[in-house]
Length: 445
Ligand SMILES: *Cc1c(COP(=O)(O)O)cnc(C)c1O
Image (tube, rainbow, N blue to C red):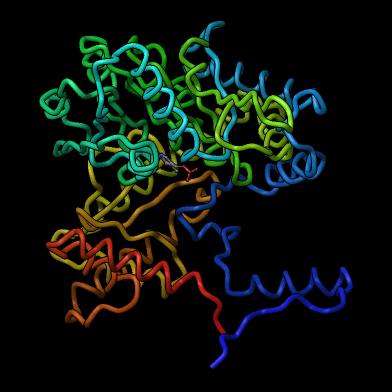
């Protein structure tokens, strides 16, 4: 039988009709505006959303590939990088690039480190990189793409990197140490000062992944919350990544990678000078780059200003504290570690946390399931301020219900995660995930 394919319509469809079809296709999508989702979208309310949308639209078609054609984008990018550097203990020497997201920022830092090692540690033929297991998979992806060996070390009971384990993992081939502020799974800050010293002592590149915590930590610190060091003030840090499409509240497609100085950033650049199309030189991975992304990042920092960020961060942190306290007060539940910012995970002592997650989903609360160890994940946005009481009420109710009722066979995501976390053979877990992806990204109906 011939395989069904979708064809584009022979004749164009009127704009209103296309737009109305787009709207109706959204009907099964997650609704983030009611603040019942705790991931994927970072929501600071409608006025911030409007600002980002209008700035993006104003530069929708401009292409940052050519700073000569669009000098305004070059100006915005360099101003933005300079402002962000100031937030992270940088100075006039600090430089960086805007990228498409945290993954590209980390990929670029690892690429720069690899090239730096070629120049400064020529004896290393098979470079290795060490990160704690809680580091974002973007690191694993970078190692995979760039041909580095990935060495992952355990975390302590507080879910922070075990620095002694990192030290013991160093071999003559090690070129990079990685640490995170804050970690995606548990919202924890690694002992970055100690990792920095280790890097300096062994002449290693040290990258701090501030993708998630980036636009929260500097403001929490200014507000007087206890925040351990996380930026260029740590002498060993050579590069740092920060996503403004997370706690900068703008649409996806914008992140920043910073370097202590331009000599380090130079390893990131790519130049091909023999192309018939001209000398091709780009700072980071992307060729064509969306002007809208740069304009909306520039717009949001000007719209909010430091005052706006301080106020939003305070709301998000106070909301997180109320959630942590509430979760700790529910018998059977516990928060993993002691998260200092706005991201947390919680688990259950003798109950199946995935059943709790599934029952919360029935009540229209959306949290991602995690494993190793089993937990539910929450990234808290300012917009969550208004849902703390109803959320905790439902969570208490659902937890009691799960502890009263017998275990039913898990279904859906709960089943998938329950199984993935307990599979002894990690290769099998990987193959299952690959099959799943293949099946997911195909035409249906
Ligand atoms: C989100 C995230 C990344 C990856 O960023 P993308 O924008 O999804 O590519 C990297 N590190 C941490 C800690 C993150 O939370």
